[in-house]
Image 1 (cartoon, one colour):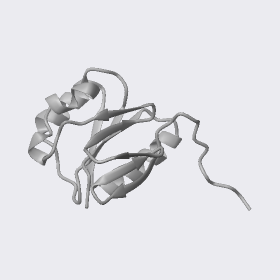
Image 2 (cartoon, one colour):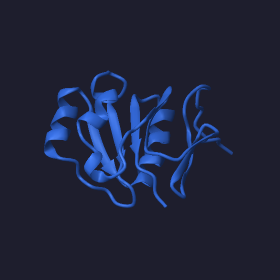
Image 3 (cartoon, helix red, strand yellow):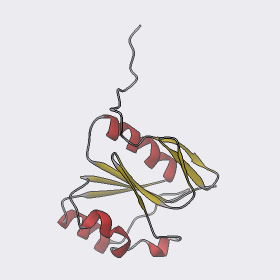
Image 4 (cartoon, rainbow, N blue to C red):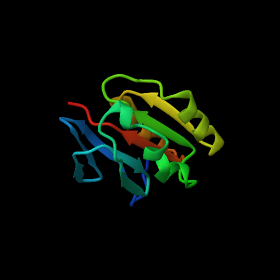
Length: 125
């Protein structure tokens, strides 16, 4: 039998569960939108899709913490504005919109592969 469970270095944030308007990440419960990085969790000051702007992404756009940003849009993927996508490209990052569940799962896979990934997550019921 071959073990295919990824080896995740200690100290990395793993998204364990999502739903019921909350997330469990590495044993900690969060009830607001958040940005998850392998080594940090950032409060994300948005509450609706309209709040997702360049300003709301300043913690990522002003640093070089990620190469891929997974945008967990809630129950359905929505395309961010072309201006926001352009800002990410200019900063050397790609923003990938998807539903929140897919963003959580994809983050865990990319993080386990030691990729420079971030997940900006809107809670879902």
